[in-house]
Amino acid sequence: MPSIFKEISENSRICIYGTGETGIFVKLLLDFLRGDVKVVCYLDSFNSGSLNGLDIIKIDDIDSIKGQFDLIFICSNFSEEIENNLKHRGILNFKSMKFLDYSILRGYIKDEISNELYVKKPVKNYIEETLDYKQKNTVCGKHLLINTMQKSGTQFLLEILTELTGYKRLSYIDSKNFSDYRTEEYYYPEIVDNYNNDIIVDCWHRNATYYNMELVKKFNFKTIVLLRNIFDIIPSFREYLLSRKDYFYFSYLKDYDFYNLSVEQQHDIVIRTHLGWLFEIYASWYKAKHKYGLDVMFITYDELVDKTEQTIQKICEYYELDKTTDEIAKTIKHVNDLKSKKKELNFNKGIKGRGRDLLTEDQKQFIMNFVKPYVNIDFSLLGIHSDFNS
Image (cartoon, rainbow, N blue to C red):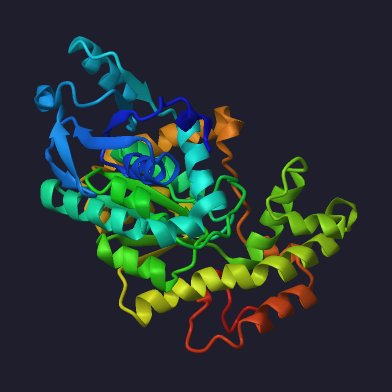
């Protein structure tokens, strides 16, 4: 049992402050792990109503339950503000969930008791009821969804859009270990939690699975997919691996003794271990757009680097963001300045077209042959077309 739950006195009566993702899971786990604890209600700074079979009490009305609770469990990103408000009201019997506590709880759900929870306490019901509550009581925010291929300028684009819009930026990698890039599904609870916020959702290297397409439609996401010439991705990704000897997020590459291979052999390993994944990202979104009618806009790395202002203007028009050319130019200049000053931002500028020179003819032909089984998909945005060898 997570230590934060062990600190709760036996037979306590608790109010959960927060009706978002954290509050949902705290209620869920308390029900499952601490049968002696009674959750009296939810508290909210602005709204009242009901959620998961409990009343939601607006904090201004907390006197209506005076004497009915022993502890307030704060489950909100605004815990400091909430704590000050409670102290101002003379309420001191509260406990705040910290980020680390919540990370542990999420991992506990995922790794320890998820199967039992889905049987005994259906998580989906909690989440769906929360979404229903938000849809009825709040206004949907503006949601920008960015999905990308590897080494395609992801960080550069995200930094520009985040600064330009001022929107909250969220990354949907549902894993305690951030290295688990291959987790496919968007993290639904956090999308629900931010239903009424203006957000930029960065979904690094995800396929357009059925589940993800349904969420895109459900939340009216308009999606940008950032692409790059496939031949240029290979050497860029090889160099990326060489720069991170302390951290292999595809651990099976260790088996190849990667760092002691020749450049050609390293390119071979990258091609043979990652090519299918890269093509599946593109192919899945291509089908989502052209077969299933999803609102998807493809942007290439070359466009982003060679015509940055025009490309960002095009993206703003797609997302219906009212930004002037001066605002766009100023933001791009600032982000470019950051690129030169802060290496920790992980900005890289690859050289366009170098894949033709760095890969062998056999490697290029292998890549060309790899796409043959894909039927009715135009790969020209990835640099594969009939005149490649011309």
